[in-house]
Length: 206
Image 1 (tube, rainbow, N blue to C red):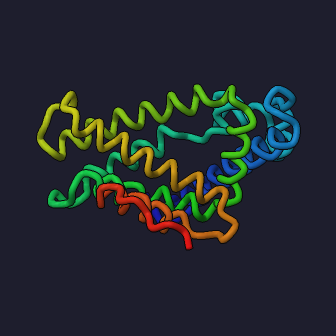
Image 2 (image 1 turned 135 degrees about the vertical axis):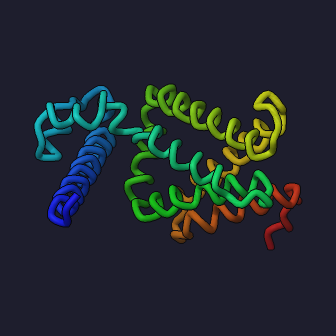
């Protein structure tokens, strides 16, 4: 591929990312304002200044635009989990594998706060979100089992995945509600450190 072709490919990829982001932002804003049942794909497309046909080049449904592409995130997390140094404990390897996703979420903090608010306001989205999370957890269990040299049916990989998921979700919800604007990375590190330490009880608030 020539330099000119590489530049053209780079421009196309950037345009695709921008279009995808515009559709997601429009979907979240409209649903936050009107409710899930009162927003159409056509309205989302118009708000993002693209056609409905273009919308379906990026998302299969309105719900997909709201939830995001969990499959892409899942693949990258598993790649990073497998690549973590072999001497690192499984729980720490999971934390390291989340680093890229955390930085991406931090950069889009307001969008993520809006997404979490929309999901909370529209329980019909939860089954899709849960299904995506379940697929991610299964992939992580298999990756952790491979790291440890045990069978995926062994209890430890599933336990590490479940505990890590709970720690991440706790940090995510605190971050979304945090008025002090602490970094998501710091909150995730705090939750994982507490789990690694055996969940000691915190000192009473003064």
